[in-house]
Length: 83
Image 1: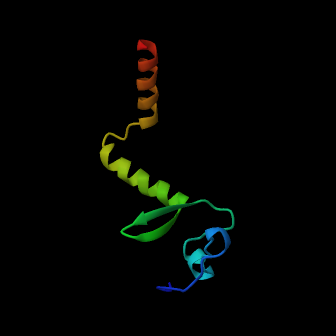
Image 2 (image 1 turned 135 degrees about the horizontal axis):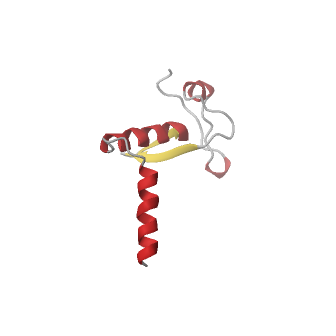
């Protein structure tokens, strides 16, 4: 992978992601990405990669391999019943 490439800010703040980077990230036209600012750097992450990253974090705390969405639904139903 190429370490750094120079590009320009275009109309409306658009930035062209060079082909080598798009290929490395498996990005295709219209694909959603997540932008974040970290220590003054703009980072672009394919949305699918961001979801996988979040799943790894949650898995660390879900040691019983429970279905967390079922737990959330049950909590919400109890709250609605008590309201």
